[in-house]
Amino acid sequence: MAQFEELDQVLVQILNGQSLPLLSEFCSGERWQQLYQRAERHGLASLVYWHTRQGQFSIPQPLFEQFKQAYLATLARNRIFYNELERVVSALTGRGIAVVLLKGAVFARMLYEDIGLRPMSDLDILVRKTDIPQVVSLLKGNGYIEPVLHQSELLKQDVTHDVHLRQSQPPYVDIEVHWLLVGGERFRQKTDMDWFWQRIVPFEGWSEGVYTLSPTAHLLYLCGHLGFQHGLGNIGLLWLVDIRRFLAKYEHVIDWEEFVAGAKHHLWSAAAYYTFREVQNYFLQAPPEAVLEQLSFQMTSEEERQVLALSRMAPSRVGLAWIQFQQLSRAAKLRNIIGRLFPSLAFMRQRYGFRSNWQAILGYPIRWVDLAQVFMKYLQARIKGKR
Image (cartoon, rainbow, N blue to C red; front, top):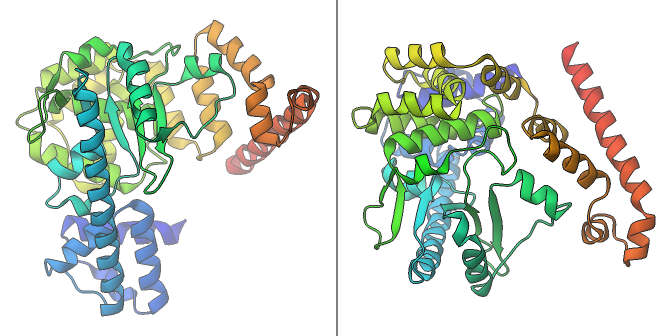
């Protein structure tokens, strides 16, 4: 862990343009390679190349070539993503469907000097809930499939806030079609989507019908997304770089009074406060201190507890499922338990390789043993982590 912290410290110094005394310690090829691997892990290899190319610091030529290749690969991949996004958006807006672009596809163009500097793993779009059936149908007609089979339709309806689709053929671009942000349909802390739809703005350089969120709304969404979905202790540095650059570019455009009111309205004050503190700790960039004080004053103990619990939690499938379970309404919790104990027969066939529905029905005890083993491993990891 200490080794990773030292590597992250070097990456932060590079991105902050600070003096780099620690670089003198990276005298062996192995250490340099570890720095490259850590940069890749955080999605920062392209940015490190950019700073190197600007002459802000020097690294061995073989390593420089590795960072350069990472940048070129990101640039090529992002060009494919944007070409596909334009094709998809054209098909949707041609049917009169308003499309709001979110996160990576917006940030790579608006926050960075070059689209090759900010890697994207998928494309996120927001449409109105009433448009979801038509959007999914159009995308499936354009070569997309749903790669993830949910355990049950009821469970899917309760906990999801998007439809995950993937191209059935190369280059296998993933698209997440949102109708909600952050929370699922049956989460107690459900997002007020009217608030966000009232704050969309045309996305500059795109055709009519293509929008993004206003800077104020987009920043609030990003804080909620990191604080309540990923957990601030488990995110890569790239997300913090996004917010740092967002603040640097839009600090005087953001309506901070509206931001604070929106955070209170959605119960996202703790998510915003601790996200900003994390960015400040790493990159010395933060909103006005008065904004941080207001967020700290108005956060509830429940939202703070939830944000801090996710921040401390080691990333695991069971841990995330437990946090998700706690956010559900009572009725949805019962459906969640039933859905996990008795998933659909299609899921049983796919997950355990049963050839018929009868085999799948008789195989439910295998499912229960599987769940028990996963849960025991999770408990052992939690107990070990507390020692």
